[in-house]
Length: 446
Ligand SMILES: [Zn+2]
Image 1 (cartoon, helix red, strand yellow):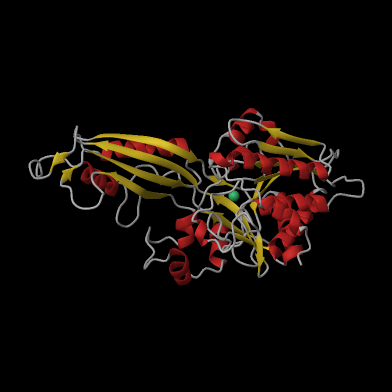
Image 2: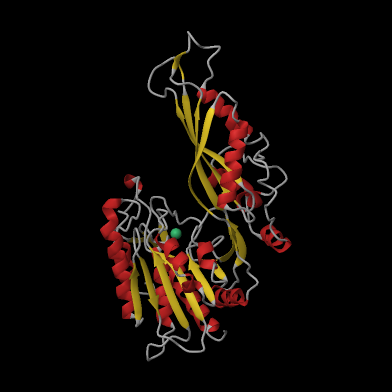
């Protein structure tokens, strides 16, 4: 039996708060209300629903303790869609425990972690319901759907981030038994390239040999943007890259990493591609990428149609690393595409969405407190790692100048965003103790 209130967590997980599906808007509100109720139950005198154009942010503040530091805790109550539904062993919104693991959508990303923060806070309250420090909670409902509510809120009210430390519990361990703290996240610049060579599709018999083909022009253009050795041929893209520090590189070398297993079990291909002379971790954490996600145009139906397509669309993205910005990368990409296009093609780059990369300086004393907390509960300090993915809200959380501690209790095999997402009950229970310990030790600092 777990040493925390499992029924309480399963109640939260039962709410299908899928933020990207309009049909679930009222469920997102239910998840927000559930949280508000819990913050009230643990005695937070300030509990608010902060509205914007989308799903609301839940804000809560502990009773004010003068002369003590303030920690802002971030998490999200929304979840990813559940398809393919038939691959779930138990239904995604009927939490089920099997073999010490709790299976449900949101079990680890991120409701389980929000629950961990809440219970950690509860565990440090004294007999009068007073915490040893000030804790503020900012729990959003649009992390999985790219909404604007929290961005608008923090742009208009940056003072909410003027605290002594920000604790983001939306990440995971490097490996079982090895907790992690994240020193960097990649950003993203997602775009569509629209290309036209003719006013209309043409017959490939009558005009083949003279008419410019939009798909051929598109694939040549795309091939021009990346060399065969994996180097992105967008001028000035590598120039501003801030390379990992010596300390980071050293720490990465010490991480247990099995290339063959990574290739066979995770990548599931026959070879790893990409820039030579850089480790896999450096390629996935500290270097930019240029990926092609899809090409549309011409004829792709059953059978044959001899057409010379007049237009083509490609969906592409750049993953950005520290030193880059989304705005600048969008300009560099646009310029490179225009330059690579032949004069007979009309080409347009539409930027769909993006986020800046993140660099966290883990030398701030708050990180020593986190080290200590993990050490005392799980027996080892977190390893410094980076993540190849993005959490676009982090730069907004950094604007108050406080250190942002990116950490969490997930495990690599938790299957977030996939069918049969789970969390190990032991991880939740350890997490409650780790964050509780963090609150206690941090309260002695200001
Ligand atoms: Zn998440």
